[in-house]
Image (cartoon, rainbow, N blue to C red; front, side, top):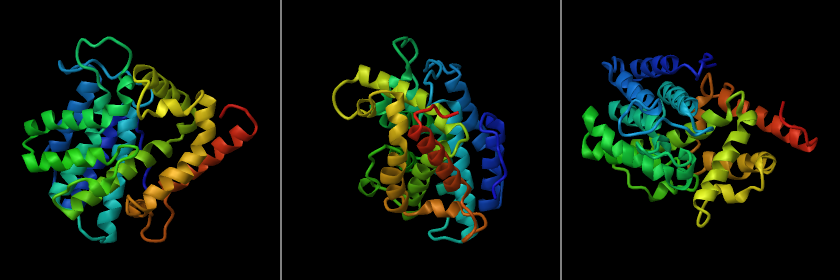
Length: 287
C-alpha cells in the first residue's frame, strides 16, 4: 500500500514526486520539480505579479496536491508493473508539470477583484493550458513538449475527448489518461471529499451566475444537497466508465501490490460514495 502523505503539506508531496522520478528514471531531477512546485506555490499565494491569490473554495492548493500525489503513485505503479509503453524522462516531466499546472486557469489576473476564480469554471482548462504555454518555456521545455503538456491538461476537461487530442507519442497520450485519472481519484478519495461538496457547489453556483448560458456544471444542481445526492450517479455513470474506457483503465496501475493487490484510491472513493449515499438516504448532512 502507498504510505499516507499529508496533501496539505506541499513539501511532502514534492518529496514523493522526487522519489518517483528517482525510482522510474534512476537519477535525480536536479531541482526541476522543486522549481515547478515553488512556482505554483508562489502563484497560488499571490506572490506572482501576473496573478491574484487563488481564491476558489474547492479547487485550492490541496486539490492540486491531491492530484499530483495520485499521479506520482500511478507513475510508480506503471513503472513497477512493466506496462507498455514504458515511461521515459520526457513523459514523467511533462506529466508532473501538467498536473501541477492543470488548475492554474482558476487564477485571476492581477487587478481582477470581481468574484472568485470559480467564475472561470467552464473555461479553466484552456486557461490552464495557456498558463502552461507562458511558464514552461522558462524551464526550457520545447514547443513540442509544451504542446504535449497542454494536451495533457486538456484531458482533465469534464467532457474532454482524449482520442481527438493530437499527441506526438503514444506514451504521452497515456500519461494524459493517467493525469485525468489522478485528477478525479485524487480529489474523490480524499477523506473529507463528502464534506467539501458544499464548496464545490458554491463554485458551480458562481460559475453559473457569471456565465448563465452554454455548458456550465452549475446549472445542473438546484442546491448543494442536490449535488451531493447526484454524486453517486456521477461516480457510477460518468467517472467509472471513463476510467475504464477513455482513460484506458490506467487506474489499475494503482493496485498495490501489482497486479492483484487492493487499489487504495478506488477503494477510498467507494467508501466516500457509500457515506454520501447513506447520508442522502436519511436526509442528514454527511457527518
